Structures are given as structure tokens and as C-alpha cells.
Length: 109
Length: 113
Image 1 (cartoon, rainbow over the protein chains, first blue to last red):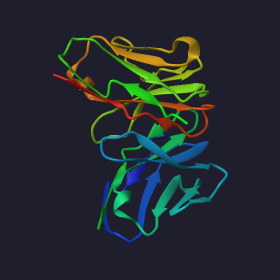
Image 2 (tube, helix red, strand yellow):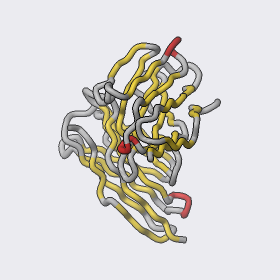
Image 3 (tube, each protein chain N blue to C red):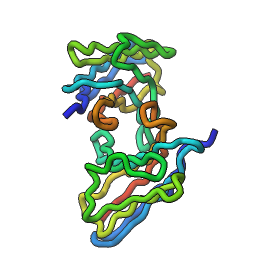
Image 4 (cartoon, each protein chain N blue to C red):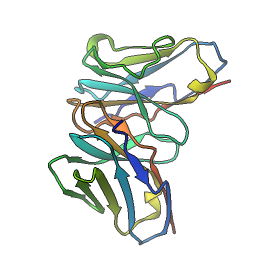
């Protein structure tokens, strides 16, 4: 299975701090994507990083990909209460997108 | 640009009853996906359509679940008969090409009693 596994399962930080979430997967991929899901809502695409890319930025988000270690990290800088959500990594390779179980981030004001 | 539309937003049924969900993807998106998300887990792909053809339905429980995408636009997902373990949020998503980002609808929360 190429299901991504996020770590940690839950993370609680103070507003203004940085949050780092990690994702590990098992097989070769074409791309890895990060999604956010607010409580009781649909998922929102955050960033897509292709297998030949090592780092990508979008606003306060920074994603890295290490294909040799089959791992990715999502860094959210200067977190806000509105960043409270579940964050999922999803991998795409020989099969369609496969999601992990997510990291639950709580940002305390 | 209008997002992915889904209806109903909530549905409560008794086990062994049938239920249907509807999805209208973003205009022009060729690829449509149905996911099942059980509480506390990530979404699991049930079926992927490219236009009106099925690309992947390997995780669709075909004895009780069916889906169609007539005319390659909107889609329906049906469960008949429902089981208790079908209680979940059913998410529809679409993408332009099938290898790019997916846009998700708000989901339908199904409770089977």
C-alpha cells in the first residue's frame, strides 16, 4: 500500500508558533498532495509537490519531499486559530490518490 | 467559479433501506471521484470516473454500492441495501485532468440506524 501515514496524530500549539506535520509512504509516487479539512466540512487542496521536486512554498506553507526516505513534511509558519483543522497527505502513483489518516492540529489563541 | 455541489447534506436511514447521493462537479472537469470518509480516518476512494467511463472502482463494494455518471457531467452514488457500517461522510471531488489537484464538495453525512 502507498497510503501516507501522518505524524503526529494530533498537535496542539499556541498561536504564532510554527506547526510541522510529517507524512511517510511506502511505494513510488508521481506526486504528493496536502489537504486541509475543517471540522465537518469538505477537504481543501493546499499544495501539490511532484516526485522530481524537493520543496515548495505557498504563503505560510512550506512542503518538502524526500523520495529517498519516502517522506514529506508540511510546515505552517506563524499559525493562526483559523489553521485549526485536520491535515491529510495523499499520494498518487500507480493507483489514484490515497489519503492518510491525518494530523489533527489545534491552534490555541 | 462554482464549486462541487452535493446533495443532500445529511441523510438518516434505517439499515436495509436504500439511499442515493448526487454530485455536480465543477464545469469542465473531466474527472469525478466518490470517497467514503469514516469518522477519524482519511477519505477512501470508492470510484473514479473519467468523463462517463470508470477508471477505478476497485474499492467499491459492488454488491451494494453503484455509481453512474451519465453524459459525463453529474453523478449519483447509490447504496442498496445500507448497512450500519456504511455510516460515514460521502465526498465527491472533481479535477480537470485526473492527475492534478482535486476540488471537494461539502459531503453528505449518512447515518444508518
